[in-house]
Structure formats: structure tokens, C-alpha cells
Image 1 (tube, helix red, strand yellow):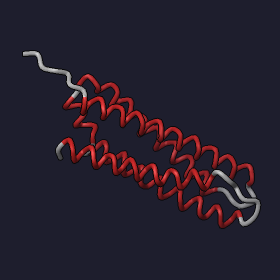
Image 2 (cartoon, one colour):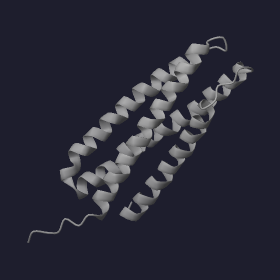
Image 3 (cartoon, helix red, strand yellow):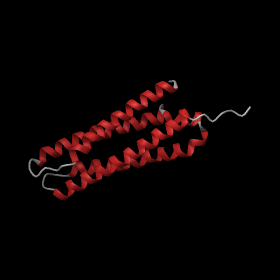
Image 4 (cartoon, one colour):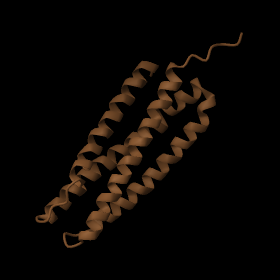
Length: 150
């Protein structure tokens, strides 16, 4: 995959993550006072779609995505790549914790529902920050001319 194809693929992936994140963010913004059981079902559905896509997205980045390309182009960025890879591990752990919490709540669990929503909002903020860092890394790696030393 050439640099242009890689950049387009990653842009599309980041847009998909953002779309799914926004669907979750929109849902957790207002917790209803009635019909909470149905609201929880939709919460689980939206979160699981987001979670599944983000897991696939991070796996793609690590297996045949930008990480290898960036290290090949700019070995000096390997420390930043390692940090972002470690964040993938952390994001997976957070998502697993939120997933377990969401699966355990019921409509009578008003405090736990609010807690799950706040945890999701925090997770979404972490993901946004992470995605921004990845974008900056890509821009730096793919557009900075470091010259040659002949």
C-alpha cells in the first residue's frame, strides 16, 4: 500500500470511529427518566458497535496500518509509536471495563447508569485525544522532509 492509499484508508477509519463515537456521545448526553430499559438496550447496542469497530481499527493500525510505515519512514518516532501502541492496550482495558459495567446495569440502577455514561464520555475523550495524536504523528511522518545526508 502506498503512502496516499494508507493516508486515505486511515482517514476513512478515523471518520468511522468518530461517527460511532458521536452516536454513543449523543445517547449518553441525556438519560431518560422513563423507559430506561429500552434506553439501556440502545446504549449497549451503540457502545458495542463503537467498541467492535475501535478494536478492529486498532488491530489494523498495528498489523498492516500506519505504525510499521511510520517507523520505516521516521525511525526517530518509534518512541511515540510505542506510546500509542500502549494506549491501544489501555483503551482496550477501559472498553472491557465499561462493557462489563453496561452489561450488568438494569433500569433500577440510576447511579450505575449515570456512572456508565460518565465512563463512556471519558473513554470517548481519551479516544479523541488518541486519534488526534495519531493524526499528528502521521502528518509529521508523511509530510516532514528530513533531507538526506550524502
